[in-house]
Length: 110
Length: 108
Image (cartoon, rainbow over all chains, first blue to last red; front, top):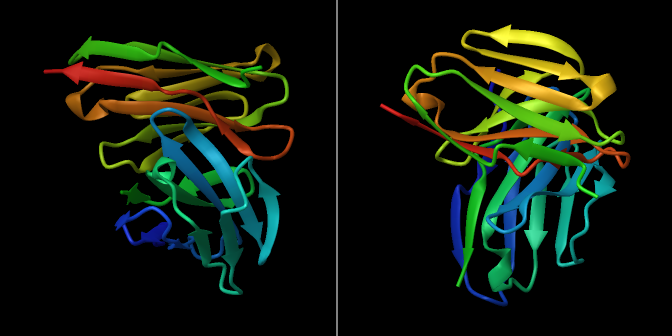
């Protein structure tokens, strides 16, 4: 069974731009979660989607949004990028309570 | 307060040595998992261990849920074990909450 995939793997943007990241979960997994990892804040939960509905949301500004499609693939969007948004963005899918992570998208904001 | 706390924050070992990593979690955290983050950033599942003991090769883990801690044992460490180890559990809001990690360096 293929693992969680994320695209793109690396991205460079400038302040003020917007970005969309994509995540495909493990086949059969209906829950997709997004996390941000920075050296200063560690790994922080962004949001979780299940059956196209946002089920949980972490403490991030409204510039961070997401959605999930009927095939369980998910996208995350960050608008009006700030320097502090530079981070590794990780996506995970889960069955019951065990989460499985993708390789991540490394975003650099210049 | 801190919901998931890991110790030690940094650990340097000689190849072949054994080590124990600890994860303390608050009473609002459950369904613990251990991960290894490789140099490329991917989180690799090690154990899903809400309670009890599991073993996988040179690695084993024990969670004592009633005392709110989990231990990860690495025996006969190898240089490929280097990286950051995270424990994580679900908080009261059903969001996976991570500890700060233990950065392990295994020297040849």
